Structure formats: structure tokens, C-alpha cells
Image (cartoon, rainbow, N blue to C red; front, top):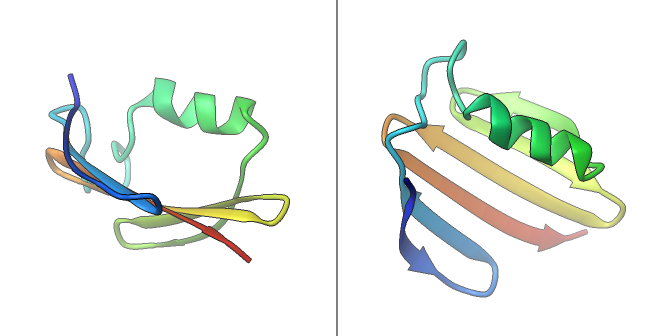
Length: 75
């Protein structure tokens, strides 16, 4: 279960045992499938950072072992 640690208008972070920085694990499958179902397209990936875009909106997701952060911006 995720526990929110920081929350701002454009950024949230969580401690979450379900995440991993290992490329083959990363975000849990259900989370990734919800992003895809929501119409978000992966546009960038480097290390633990993955960027998704939908229209003029962009989210940066950082998945590390036990930690997840999500930054939201408009282009």
C-alpha cells in the first residue's frame, strides 16, 4: 500500500513497497496498465525516470525501490 509523503499541486511522492528501480520490475503492472488505459504515451525513459505525455500534459514518474514520485506539468 502506498503512503503519501509529499503533496503539492505539481508533485507527489509516496513510499510504496510495490515499486522497484530494477528495469524489469519498475512500476507495478497494474499501475502501468492504468497509465496506458488513460491514454498516456511513454515519451522518454532513462534510469528510474519515465516520462508520459497526453495532449499538452506531461508526467514524470520516478520509481525507485520502495519510493515513487510523480511530477505533473503542462507544455
